Image (cartoon, rainbow, N blue to C red; front, side):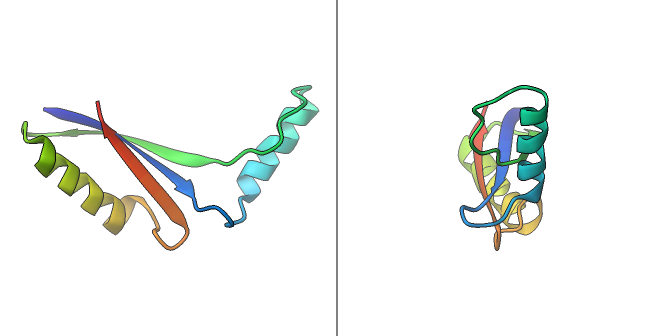
Length: 80
């Protein structure tokens, strides 16, 4: 069994209204000095098998086809 964590974030230059809302809420709660918040998604996966190279290939394909909108989002992943 191979475990992996995928992180998906908006590309630089893409507006992030949810991040702005979080930034404002943090300020309203008294957390001053937060200059910028960018939100994203995290996926924890468990894949059958033990071939790390094959798992990395599959995860990249999953990200490109479903987990990330590669027009506006970047993704990274790590094998845990």
